[in-house]
Picture 1 (tube, one colour):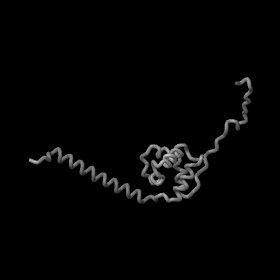
Picture 2 (picture 1 turned 135 degrees about the vertical axis):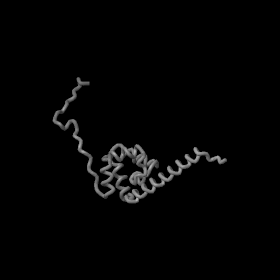
Picture 3 (picture 1 turned 180 degrees about the horizontal axis):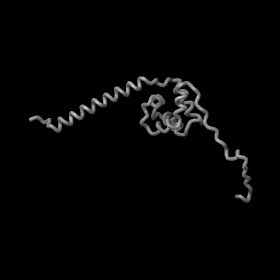
Picture 4 (picture 1 turned 30 degrees about the vertical axis):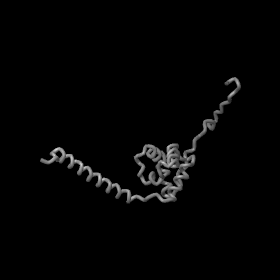
Length: 131
């Protein structure tokens, strides 16, 4: 009598199917990734400069600090390898259009001009007795 009972054989079958499915998924993901263009050194330099600028979102600036700390690389972020990371997703969601423009060699859109509260013509004078 063999130690490979019907339950063991069924488990081996499930495992073999799972491994085959994982292999198919990895091959498909690799094909999709190969179709895309890897970020160039110039792309990465432009993204770094933008991420360090005040025009970048707070999420992108935080991601730049993490990358500077050695936790990730811009190549991982821009190629999609780090897409599982919540900080990467937040930065991409906040600055997706600008990052795409930078990787196309274009200039990102300037941030929207914020109007200061005192530009509406209603000037508030603070006097000593207001303190």
